Length: 272
Ligand SMILES: Nc1ncnc2c1ncn2[C@@H]1O[C@H](COP(=O)(O)OP(=O)(O)OP(=O)(O)O)[C@@H](O)[C@H]1O
Ligand SMILES: [Mg+2]
Image 1 (cartoon, rainbow, N blue to C red):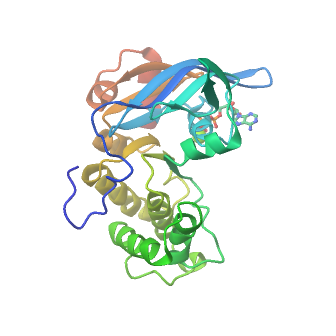
Image 2: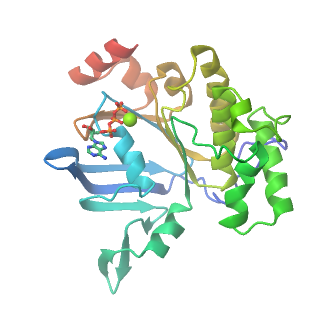
């Protein structure tokens, strides 16, 4: 943990930044009808790392995040989060489909920020952030509010606790959504093109906040972005997807400057 004393700690939720596997996909296949979107996919994300998924539209990046959020279920294969199966349970050495309760417990380790903020429109900023910690984690209102205020400082909105979402810019709403996700003390934060719905002049503020979180907390990040400079700044590893498979992976300086794969070169020349 490299946070200074003003940075909200994630240490309760993420006690070990030791490179152990936090996310593991083994042989995950996802189909929609005859469309094989993820094809026998294996990959891992180590605890505390920041991993970025890049690749062409339709290559399956969002599908990976939706599987982790259990908004979708894999057709084949298994997903583990912090060593626990997400949609399976192990009984007597055998795997069977998990019950809702098991899945809900494992999913608590994961927070997600969506492209379209998805704030509760009828609640002010503070309540948007405290609602789930109070009702899902069982925090007292005071504890949840104290934590929410710290997080609002982190996303540079300490003075907007009482505002309603419609009174905020898109960039501000997205920063509230980031604070709301962190309030659940997830071990891993999933970010799906979180700046792509924003006006261009609001993008930098959101990326700055995410850079700050990446550099000052120990949270693991799995990020889909078309912001290649941002990806270069925060990523430990970049995974290049094509047609539901990882075709190349490595540190950003390698992938962005000296990719092995022709498909990666084509993709980067189109987006850079
Ligand atoms: N609910 C769904 N029903 C049917 N097909 C779907 C569904 N969700 C995704 N797909 C298909 O799965 C494929 C992968 O979609 P996904 O959203 O994961 O791509 P992506 O890599 O995130 O693309 P983009 O960069 O455009 O966001 C696409 O062909 C898409 O049409
Ligand atoms: Mg997508």
